[in-house]
Length: 352
Image (cartoon, rainbow, N blue to C red):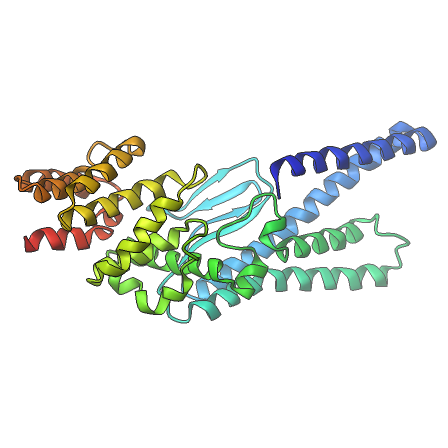
């Protein structure tokens, strides 16, 4: 949804609600209407957070049973972070929820993802149905009761979870619950790439965690928007000794980048294409890629590997540059990705 449309919609909605509350205030007294509004708002917020928490807990439990590595869980303002040596808890101003996880391996990834995606809506649907039956048996004349509000907020939570991403204020790359159930190409590509990242984080090689043959159908159209999965697929091809497959895709990516592309993706893509060009003997194109990398990369050691490849293409002594890059990469907190994503470059240089 366009940000400007969202703002206009929010203003119109707030104006309509405020206008209606003002009319009710004139008819029944502003003190009564104000008190009722505050009470209903607080009960609605509590019901929303209850549904949200149980919804995300269901996703969490399913993710654990399906072999996903859970890295963080957000339950409204409460965030549980499991990425460090011990769990951490901190607060945010958000009222949303999510489970940040990485699948272990790509085996049966589609069915496993569907189980995780379905767990949340099933929990919400069960709670909402149970609340609706209890509300009906209570004989309450309207939904303006705590139990009735619980039912309404459950329905809202369920509808939100099952909306297409295009209708949300910000479309998640991982897909909504509905999209994870239906698994369009882009969503499955995102989760396949996430599985590869999980393997890399454990020290595995790209070629062993991402099979380029089995995942080639997940690539976007060559004229479409650049996706993160493309870079992972290219790395898998390079690590498997198939540079002729990676080369055209990397060149296509750099031609399709626009201002909205993630900076890190642009940087890494130019770096990989530069190394490949240099190892092919095209030092001029590699130097142009290096210039692009330097525009966005703040780490002083990051370009060292590409510079070593360029030095090799020029017939210069590249080994000191490689040694400095490896020492800095080994000392960096993200060493598993720095080394793992460049195993094919290191292997090519070692063969020289």
